[in-house]
Amino acid sequence: MGDAAVVRPGWLAGPVPRLEPGDVACWVLKSRAAPAEIDPGWAPGADSALDRCVRRSYRLALMTPGRPCLLWVSGAHQPGVHALGEVTAAAVEGAGGPVVGVRLTRLAEPVARAELLAHPAARDAEVLRMPAGSNPSWLSPRSTPPSSTWSARPGAARRVRETGTPPPAQPRLGRWLPVTDSRYRWGGLSWVLTLQFFVVEAIAAARYGGYSYSADVISDLGTADSAARLLMNGSFVVQGLLIAAGVLLLGPGLAGNGGRLARVLLVLAGLGVLLVGLFPSDGVTAVHQVAAGVHLVAGSIGLIAVAYAVRPRSEGIGTTLAVLGLVGVIATIFFGSAVFLGLGEGGMERVAAYVIPIGLAVAGVALWRQKDDWLALTNPDGTPSRRQLREDARLERAQRAAERDAALEAAARRAAERPAAPARPTPAEDDDDFDPDDPWAPRRR
Image 1 (tube, rainbow, N blue to C red):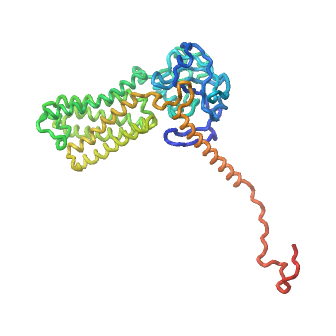
Image 2: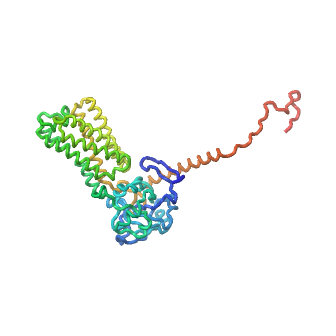
């Protein structure tokens, strides 16, 4: 972006570039209202001329007529891109604030938010990376997929196909698993169902004579001495499959470095507990112990990685997952070091193991609700919500601070480059005009 100033207001907003005209390939107008609510007669494939409310900022000067734009709908029902078109009139002051004129073509099939998160080019778009950012948002040339990925999509407008600025066609995970909102529901359900472990453990422990949650480890419930060993070992195998299935289905929601690390670690955790079920502790002991260790370590650290992946969407959930993961890591270290702190061997192992299904269930519910209404960015009429007003105010303060710092640095550079003035001769300590024998004599000026 050339010499554009970059502001870093905090972890939620992330880096905020001060845009130049060449940085913007397409403007993104946000709304919580669906196209049918914005214009009741707006049918799929039809055009509609609209005046959309926008937030007052320097970006409005860059929204010149003819620039491509799209309509981003947030909320619980089909969040994503619902219409494509172009700016028809520059921003003017309306009754409730600035408004900009646009002409949009409603898509026959909206582009889901999950599709953009899964797309390697679009996932870095500001509207996804900084969901509480300004309205309008924008797509850069780098985060805008090529037009060939869009032109095959039904309902696309000819004008927008030629610009090559809209979001991508529906990506797939491999050749058989499309990215849809239902993936989040099934993925979240997979992680919620990992709580089955507690139910099966209670049944197996009840059928194991004299079993102690404090003194006996979990693996004892899968040995030949346990009457419900097949049920317990089957639960271990199912647990591994549920963890891996959740990772596969919720992959687009686990973005960033934290998300990529979480996917690897949780797959290892799922594989570990699956092997625990296939190789009981009274069978191949070495494999069982290594698999159990991998499950505890990878699962706990994986929760911390998931916390970083979901924290931009909910700080409370991210903090909860980070605390659970940290407790799991510490308990795993204590369990491996035979430091039980009065809990007993089985009690310390349960502290290390229980946080994993609890954390996965919390994360599964959070990602199940992978909707833009979490942040309530705009009101139904397109005006900014309180949260967006607060976020925009914070961004503006950070931008002003960056501009002030840039001005001070420029002034310092100009001062350093200015040629130094010739030094003036300093008078001698003893004035030549002073006559100590006649102090009343007149002096030369």
